[in-house]
Length: 143
Image 1 (cartoon, helix red, strand yellow):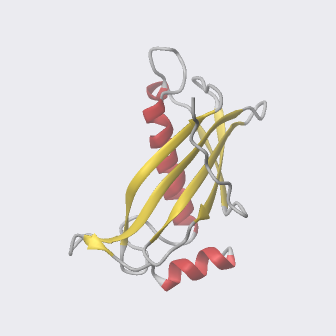
Image 2 (tube, rainbow, N blue to C red):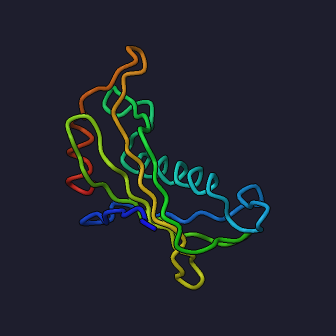
């Protein structure tokens, strides 16, 4: 059986903490896979906000998710606080890969590694855009 391999970034750019809510729990009484992606979306919004951006306006262009991969490492449960560390790999002329490392706060247990392929996107023209220099500058300087 092969497993998804998620490349760890050279440095983590952002850290946030998110609490698992009852709507994040599945019939197995643990954090569901779709909830992990939803929580990563929240973490991504917090990262962007930290740099003064949002998903619709980063130097005049937006972001769109091209793909996502989750590597499960443990279970999260209702009420758990999760630490999210976010970093970027594969910064290109049109996008990047965003890496998320999730750990349970109380005991440090690894919950998941997630990656999302993100592209800069012009929603008005409905096409991929170039990476804004303001974004490249912000993340390489660590803001």
